[in-house]
Length: 326
Image 1 (cartoon, rainbow, N blue to C red):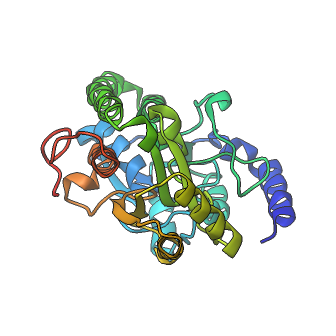
Image 2 (cartoon, helix red, strand yellow):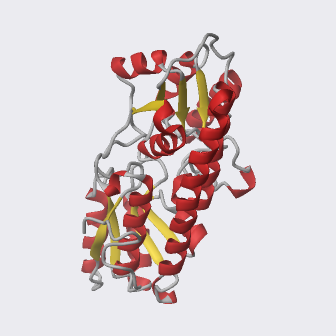
């Protein structure tokens, strides 16, 4: 899709579906609730929030698991069935689930549907380099911004189920306290990276919010959406930057093929600059289910700890809580 066609698509999409796209909801279904509530989240990061806030009052199904790229994801028939039977649905918004747009619009006519980004002040959003009139959707990389997504989930659940509002609020406050500690940990360890080495080069441009929050310059081989592919000039430009700035480590991602990243490494080597892969980061999906890295806190802990150690900073070998697998 060309940049012009993308802009036309976005304009039409927003004009037809602006309440849903902005995080509003259609007329909510009526009737008594049954417990546990049936809740669907599009990504693992959102599902993790909802699981903490709902607690025993809800069962959360996540559509996209580990190693799934939400930019490219297409819902299956089973996904549509889950959405149609859910009491409430949470998605990221900001075009992260672009290929699910039509499905979310259809479901939003009869189910409660909320974008967890709906309370974020647009003044703190980063612009997308891939699409006109669009924002970078990777807000979870900034822990403090992601805490605002927790508030969206609380408000939505309380609105739907006011009799359990105190439980939702207590669960959320407990989780927010954990996120406060995580944010503090990331800030403290990133500050140990030598200033001249605070450059983060990744497979695609998903770490802008991480960089702006914690003081790193961020460059991606691909754009913010993995639908865009790195061209030869993109690769050559990044190679020149790496050589000129003597960058020694770049980072792969669990949901992005590393072909373009390897081309950058080889290009730098041809110019006499040795570059290693400093580790694999979780960008658009968390780690495997059932692991510490398969939680939002574990995901960010892994990313921050891996980045800091590879760039010459100091971080505990097994991270914030001593639970990292390596």
